[in-house]
Structure formats: structure tokens, C-alpha cells
Amino acid sequence: MLLNFFPSRSLALYLGKTFLWRCFAMLAMLVLVLQMLDLLSEAGAVLAYPGNGDGELWRYVSLRTPQIISRFLPFSVLLGTLIMLATLNANSEVVAMKSGGLSAHQILAPLMLASLGVAVISFVFNERVVARATATLSAWEDAKFGPIPSDRGIKSNIWVRDGEDLIRAATVTGSGRNVRLQNVDVYDRHGDRLISVISAKQGHLTADGWRLEQVRVFDVTRGTSRDVASMTIGKDIRPDQFTLSSVDADGLSFVELREAIGILRESGRPVASLEGALWHKITGPLSALLMPLLGSVAAFGIARSGKLFVRAVIGMALGFAFFVADNFALSMGNLGVYPPILAAWAPFLLFLLVGEAVLITTEE
Image (cartoon, rainbow, N blue to C red; front, top):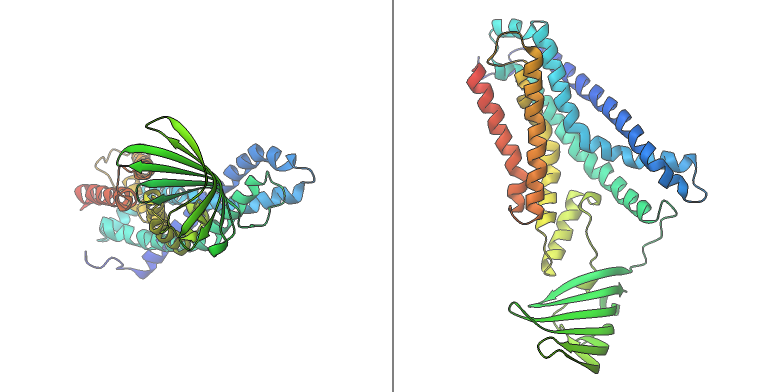
């Protein structure tokens, strides 16, 4: 009996449907309230641009709502789990199921399967809808909620590594071998020491490397400067290393972000934070799978004194502790303290073990 997680098809369907209804009801409530609050705070900025009206407000809502759904879907699964299990416990349905020979894992199995389906839907929704909405909303916000300018291939503040040296171009235009650099700074380093700083008004690609013009060289050791008509640097630097702009992980799908990370890694840029965001595109939706396990304290627990509210609070505390740990691990990954894969997966695996240990210890 214990090896069969779905001994009753009717009971599994009943639990699964009840669970999904509670989760999506909580999601609808959260999205409605949070979207109204967000619109109240941002409506002034949207309407501040001349000519904007109701149409632009509805456009903002259509772009912001997918982000809210994506962010708070795991919260709604947690709340839906607590409400459902607390109701089953209060109505003695859990007692009836256990008296019929069902174990705690068999009672939770339909919920886990349904939450896995929610995780898959969330991942597809993030890839197909949220990433595009985020990219569009970011561009619109940069334009102060005015017309979004077309991408003319102009990029700014681009950094490239050439061995130990660092090169910064204030403005990069063009593509391929027609790339043009404006206001270039080259930091000539040897080991941990800065030897000189080379500043140039412009630069372009030649057969021998990047030719800089109107150059000034500042010798850090001597504290002197000299002007040079031109010089050539970075023979091994490819044009695409300069045409890479900053990457917004939230505005890219999983495949697009993985390709961007590969290009950035080849150009010598740090990609640890982006790798953490890449893995989190999987663990984020998958966190819905943990919520029935962490919220099961509302139905199962050591105490049998009828303190249902206390057990529900404990389940909510476990769920929110996971979200705190998840955000903390991502922050540590962005700072380089944790490896990217550890920052993304450690909280999920840790709380999976915690929830399973609590369930086995108390109920099995």
C-alpha cells in the first residue's frame, strides 16, 4: 500500500482539483491586489509623458501583470496548500483518509503531482510571456513611458579584457569589421599593478588590431602624460566583444540567456550572476513543488491538541523561510560567494530534505 502513491483515482482527482482551485483563487486575489497597488504607484509616471492616457495605462497593466504572476505563483501555491489542508483537517477528512489506510505521502501525492504541473506551466509562461513582457517594459521605462526608440546598434559603456589589460569604450557603433569606438580608455596592467592609462578619442579595426587615434598616455609610475597620434592594441580582440551590451537576465528566455552567457564568457566577462539567474529559471518555477510538502504541517504534525492555526502558521513560516533562503543564496551567488549552481539549487534541495524529514518523523 505504501508503494502505491495513488491507491484511489477518485480521491486523487478530488484532492488535485481542490488544490488547484485554491491555488489559482489565491493567485487571482494576489495579482488583483498587487496590480492595483502597483498601478497606483506608477500611474503618475506613465501619465507624465505628454499624450499618454487610458490606453497607456492598460498597456502598462498588460506588461506588468505577467511579472506579478510569475513572482507570486509560488506564494499562491503555498497559501492554497495551507487553506486546503487546514480545511481538510478541520473537517476531519484527513482523519478519514488515514483511517482508510492512506499514509501521509499518499495524501500529499496528488498535490505534489498537481504542483509539478503548475511548475511546468510556470516555466513555459515565463519563457513565452514573462521574458518578452519584461524586455518591453524595461525599454518603455527607459524611454520614460514614451515611444520606444528603435535599436540602432549603439551601445555604451562596454568593457573588454585583453589579457591583463582592461579596455573601456564609452560608445560603440556599427557591427562586424565596421565597429567604431568612441572615447576609449585602456588600463595597462601588469600583475596587480596599474602601469599606464591610455585614452583615445576614437578607434577602429585594422588588420593588425584596433587602431586608436588622438591618444594620450598617462604613466602612472612617473606621473607624466604624453600625446600620441595613433597606436594599435588588442590584436586578438574580436569585434563582437565590443558589440555586446549588458544582459538583462529577466528579459531573456532560458535559451537566449544561455547563448548570451556563452558569448560573454568568450569575451572574458564575468558571468557568475547570469549563470545563477539561468539556473534559477528552472528552480524558480520548480519551487511550487515544495509548497505542498512544506505546508503539510497544517494537516500533519506532532501536536494533536487541535491547534490548527498554530500548525498553519508553522507551515507558512517554513514556506517563507524557503523564499528568504532562496533570495539570500542568489545574492551570495551574485557576489561570487557561492558558485552559481549552488546558489540556485541549494535552497530547493535543502528545504526538500527538511520537508521530507519533518513529514517522515512526524507521520510515517
